[in-house]
Image 1 (cartoon, rainbow, N blue to C red):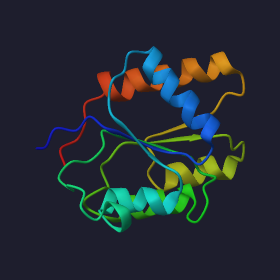
Image 2 (image 1 turned 180 degrees about the horizontal axis):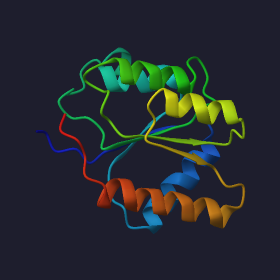
Image 3 (image 1 turned 30 degrees about the vertical axis):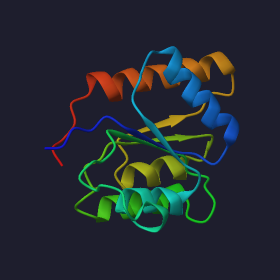
Image 4 (image 1 turned 60 degrees about the horizontal axis):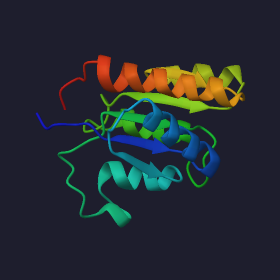
Length: 146
């Protein structure tokens, strides 16, 4: 089994990217964070295509934080493609979204997300939520073998 400690943040909003990275830094979570700005870039990273064609595919992220409202390919389609491929179907995926739509919640779990978190609007609540999910998923959680 290959050592996995990177985190893939799939987020198109620069402010949310910055806040998420700051929350991890303040939590002293030192995992490498790879940022994909849309669904296509996320899939390219995970499957070693496009600008990531030379990436070592034996090293997969320990966690994927996936927004639903993404340009080019939305988060639900990204999740569907991940779960359909044997190389990525067991990767932990946490949906981190502003969506209040119950159907998004249902669809996310139906497609195999591991957790669904609505981004708090309040700055401190957002920071706390991201810190807690980082501690749980990157420190306490035991990863499946890939």
